[in-house]
Amino acid sequence: MAGEVVSRRREAGGPLSFSAIGVSLEAERVPTPDDLRNLVARLRAARARGVTTFDLPEGPASERLERAIAAAFPAEDPDLVLIAQRSTPGLERESGRRLASSPVAGSLIERSLAASDRRLAPQRVRVIDWVPTDGDDEPAVRRSLDDARTPGGVSEVFWRIDSGGRIPSTSGDRPGVAHLSGSLSLLDRRLLRTLEPRAAGEALAFLARDPLGAGRLDGSRLAEAGLPRRPDAAPARVRELEQEFAPVLSLGYLTQGRGRTLAQASLQYVLRRPWVLSALVPLPAPERLAEILGAEGTPALTDDEMARIDGAPPDR
Image 1 (cartoon, rainbow, N blue to C red):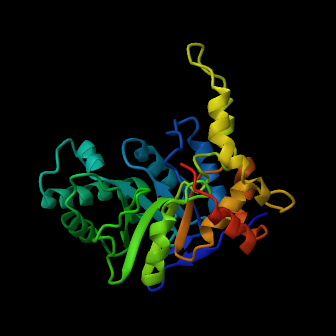
Image 2: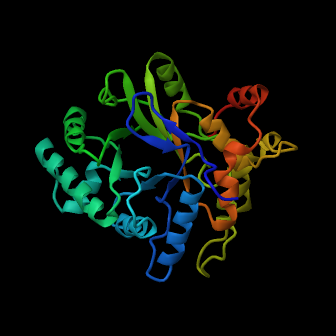
């Protein structure tokens, strides 16, 4: 089935429109010249089904992935929202120097983004997802990130939060709006304790990472566990796998006679929240593309199913 099947979401008053299901290249194997063509084809197939949001990792691996984006989309596409992950350690590795002050941090952020934009041309980074680390001077980092905004370039800055859910005071770049990202799935619902009260009191814009539970909800983790292993590698322990997948088996009621897969149910669960701008999934294999990107078209989770999910203790 061709055409746009992924819906679009826009933060109220925000400048960008995100695809409800976005693609994260964080776990994608760095392409060699031989398999770059395959990656480009997969990126184009995702775009043909309505994906406009693509998330790029930080570090050396991102350079070839950025060039793959440029090869996949050689004409300027104003609907593309490219997310660039950045952090203080990453900028230090990239520059070969320690960030001793916020002015240095600001110059290195701008230099790093300019290098990404050159590799991505004619596309540009539109969103920064900042991964804070201990020792960051949050107000100084926020000022540096805000200074990195440019017309036609970076429009939004998101702040990564961990499962503890501590929201930094600098997380909102417009009054009353918090731009955040973090893990959220059927198996990891811990952030909801922080996010849902926040969304009830003010505007919240959220990028949902790992909505497929590290591959447990779409079966890719199980397939990985069954891959041939090196002769000197220890075999996968059945008991460990049983423990890892026990929470997944307990969710079987979401698929039995429901006309949806567990991966689709997890995406529906995440996207049920209007403050989620995009659920970022690994780039699907060609044979899984229609299933993953078609999640919004499957039967919606019922109120009873939602209550049963939320009434169970979160995994992890």
